Image 1 (tube, rainbow, N blue to C red):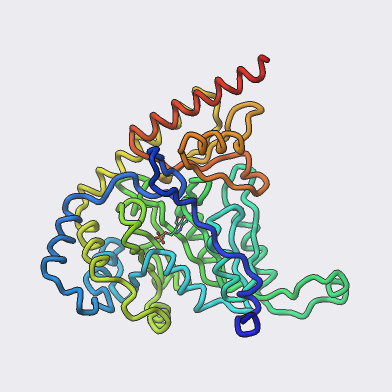
Image 2: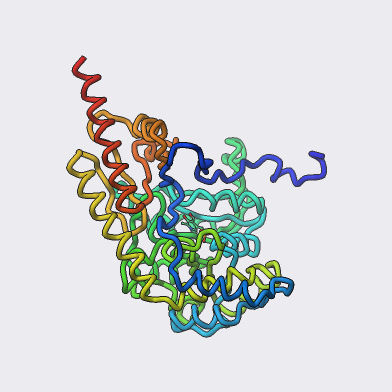
Amino acid sequence: MKELIHSHINRMSPYIPGFQPRSGSRPCIKLNTNESPFPPNKKVILSLKKALKKNKLNLYPDPSCVQLRKLVGKKFGLPSENVMITNGSDEALSLLFRSVLSSKSSLIIQEPTYSLYPVLARINDASCISVPLQDDWKVNFSRLIQTINTNSIPHENSKAEQKQKKPKKTPIHLAVIANPNSPTGIAEPLKQLLNFAKENPSLTLVDEAYLPFMGSRWTDFSAGKYAGTKDFPRLTVCGSFSKAYSLAGQRVGWLLAQPELICNLDKIRDSYNLSRLAQEAALAAWKDEKGFLHTIHRICRNRRKLNLELDKLGFHTLPSSANFIFTRPPLELTAKDYNSFLISKDIFVRYFEQKKVNDYVRITIGTKKDMKRLLNTTKEWINLCKKKVQK
Ligand SMILES: Cc1ncc(COP(=O)(O)O)c(C=O)c1O
């Protein structure tokens, strides 16, 4: 079998999603994949019921998602031609990566960021260059540009490099910036992102999966309205219905880009990439502005409260603009130990083993009740640790 599979696929490691606890006897809290803790609003459920009543599931859905493209485009002041609706924003990433990356090109990202990006590069046999975030966890834009410029022209390795067995440099075709970033939750100013997109000779993708948690005027912070326009032809932006629209289970996302790029991506996507029900749910969620604002308001309020309470316990938390926080336990206590204790109490957060990030855990913002249980369990852990030290 091995000989039949691309060798780069054989060699690569898969993306590992957050642990999915099975519903057991003890109620668990799942705070590890940045889902919304609130189910979709009534209007969304009603639209799904109506769609089921019409019972057209024997027929294929709209292959062009005409209505959704129109509405999403309108929000960013873009025509439908600049919009593609995808099966979660992961599909937008996957299509874009497939269309521009190969063994002859590279991706550039920050480190740390969403761990799917390097996996998608590897699927396309492309190399992935990571530029570390600055000490304040912000994007190092000048280093990114510098790296892109030195890699932009394909060249044979020098003799010295060949001796050191350095891999041949391949030109960078795509730069991805998650804004806000994951796992940090930190957002970059729009101006900086636009300056970068202008300077970057390759494609720029700004991944705005978490941007709505900037608040009710989130589109003011979005690069969306510039995507694929005359001044920013190489800028692309993706967004998601999974987080702020509470529709992770329906898999809907969007990509904003130049029409020529959208046409090319259309060639490689599954014609019916969004089910009828997914389209209905997304339309209803997008139209229900009041319900959407209520959801993000509650999440932002719970985020503020959790931050304050963890501060009181001596945790260090990065300033988050997303529906999660990245936080470090106090003093000599370790994030690894904290994570293990939470698991023993059926609370699942995200712990990353890699250096620098392994001092922190990423916690998705849940309901008031979830946050109360998390805090009580955290206090219990700290008291236990204190007792151990006193012994
Ligand atoms: C930064 C980032 N982008 C994109 C996604 C994918 O979201 P979707 O559910 O829309 O595929 C995630 C998922 O967690 C994410 O963290």
